[in-house]
Image 1 (cartoon, helix red, strand yellow):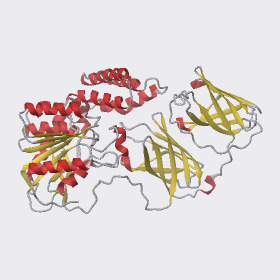
Image 2 (cartoon, helix red, strand yellow):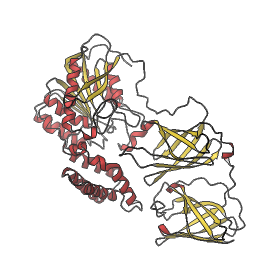
Image 3 (cartoon, helix red, strand yellow):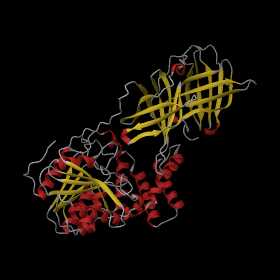
Image 4 (cartoon, one colour):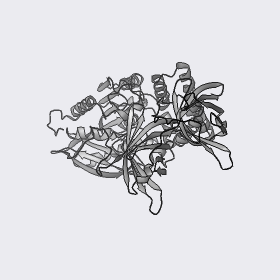
Length: 595
């Protein structure tokens, strides 16, 4: 095993509470618990259970919850009344300890790979056997996982297996759109164990939960995923109506002062069904309208991400103010057919034009006042569609790239790594490996060659860490299929500048000052240059302070912040976008249904 995995990981540095020790007069079989102090002063809680077999041989197991190690068998176990020694040969660690002068604790040292650091173990106070009074009935428990900068809330429902002593369970994680996902490897007694594992090929590594009951209705422990460990707390829910709610105050709630119609139409590329929602303002039409184009990856019509629904928020805001909005599911998502990962940019552009044609056919829509709103990758595709279709009257680009896919991916990755403190020399090595990976994809190299290029980049990201190979394997498992997809190969070469040089309709481009995924300076400069080359004077480019790639008010702009931010999209962006669209559609003075 590689987690403990040298006892040298720079872990969370959080020490689990340890019960007051029972006095020990000698080293006896049973459980001993305490912590070791690593050279970087991180304290790692662990416990050891020592035993004497019927034949007199001595054995022991070690548990290190923060590192996902549970009941690992130890080697070369020897103990008597006053001293103990054991080894973990797989990782080259040797423990030696003696009962201290006060006869209450074992104190000793761990030697591993030339390093020596101390440990201390005591006998725990006896714990009540909670399983004696666990009712055999369905139970709902509220969970909180302590992630860096975020308390991730979830809910677990445990159900007893009929005619058995075992339990099953399901988990709801609203912030990740997970509902009633079956748990694996469920244990529900004094110990609460379960594993969360998605079945998709691109799913993240399993999350392994190991908790110990601290009361009849509480438990605490850790979960381990991809070599990282985080603290977890569970508490039983007695209110049958209680739900885990996300803090997403901008998500629209009914009743709505406008009509919402579920629609479907067929792509003129291959007949695939495109499904979406058309929201139509109150009052007599025909109304101006916009078609919304999502960012990269498989997105639903609301562009749902980490509990946020930015396209729903924008659509609601615009429709209340006189602008009809069509937002659609990507291919292979929701009610749309096809597979977005096997779709080229050319197909996506033709789907956009088909959507514009669909809008123009609706009796409530003014076909002379139809525009586009593209976010992120959608902002790449919108100019290409606008350069081909004269029926598109105006276009708004949100956090849109102005460079090629290859340039953007190198740029965004380097900026994120810089923001988290990676030194320039290391970033340069990673950028070279990243470029080589994209070359392998574009050149159509074999799966093995692409996997090795991806593994090389992953190793550089984790250089010096004892779990580097495990990390590299996980990255390959998660990302290799995506790297070989039609979409990824196509997006590397995607570039909207040639199309922008042909666009002469009104254009609004909004970006966030701290967008690390589409860095504003470089991309807005290229968008401006291409539109200037077109001779387009109807252009407004706005970089808004303190906003990230999702156009949320943020701290540093890191993608890891998206989850913790309750704001879905800055109200200033909504107001700017709405005012500009109303001006293009000639309705700035018209009355509309407000919030």
